[in-house]
Image 1: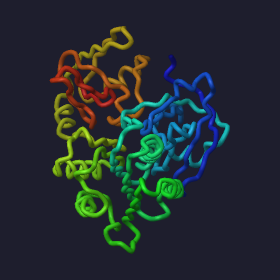
Image 2: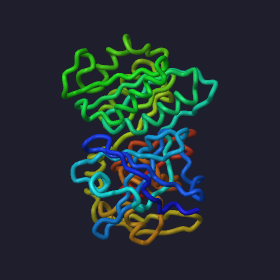
Image 3: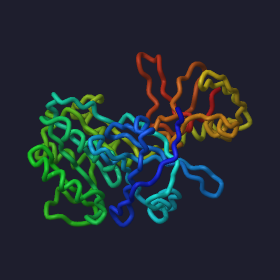
Image 4: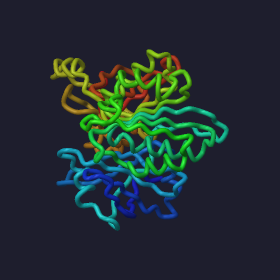
Amino acid sequence: MSDKFILKIKNIIKETKDCVSIALDIPAEHQTSFQFKPGQYITFIKTFNNEEIRRSYSICSSPFENELRVAVKKVEDGLFSSYANEQLQSGDLIEVMPPEGRFSPNLHLENQKIYLLIAAGSGITPILSIAKSILQEELNSNVILLYGNQKTENIIFKEQLLALKNKFLKRFQINFLLSKELTEEGNFYGRINSQKLSIFKNTLFNINDLDEIFICGPEEMIVDCRTYLLEQGIPSLKIHVELFGAKINTKKQEKILSRKGNVAHVKYKLNGRTHELQLDYGESSILDAALKQNSALPFACKGGVCCTCKAKLLEGTVDMLVNSWSRTRRSGQWIYIDLSVLSKLK
């Protein structure tokens, strides 16, 4: 099965002054490939100045809506986000990878859960999909949303959220926080952080009653909120996070640069075939080197967060410059590694 498809833009909606939502027209023959779970993302592929770039965006629609729609917020100097907001039009064709991601709840009709959803800025995109899906599928579950923005005008999907609130009045609670606009209630002025959660745990929710927590937004907010929730006794398995990006590990970067002149021998297996690389330390990632050899390693973000190019380390050691999802499972049997940010295998 192909991992890339040419699809038509169904329509584009201007959500805020710097954010659009894009619906894709999925032909009948590709419907199976583009089935998705709430909270997943798709990756657009576009060539600018003879350079192919890939950008991943979360799906904001629910599987129950029979539509696949993503939101793209324009960022400063963003190639694809600027293109999507300023040039992309209904009817245009674009290359797309099928939905991926594990930032998704396990929904069951019989569930009776309390979900806490935390989002900032465009982090609302997968959170909106999750909220709509929970409310539609789990008739006895409740959803509490904390959504932070700078100003009211920056609130993406504000009308959708309010309509959802009106539809599920008893089961959906929305709380908007603004960091650059004064609010009547002082607790809702400022950014979402551990201090806010400490205040809200006694007013908006009972922390001991929370069954699942989903957090999406900047790394600083996620780390701070997750740390606080863990300190409050929430099991880590109940806390699900999705980052916009991950920071470079400067100590490991210095270690790698100090070993310039050394060569690493890399052997990797893809689709049953073994490939080999000779890489100078600090010069290239495994992914970039493999792509130059026309090896079709899968990738989506190159940011160390999506896990599209995860791999199983069989032998040797690795230094990770950027990766928030590297983890050991089953007593060390599996180590998931994002190949786009591997420094070297030695």
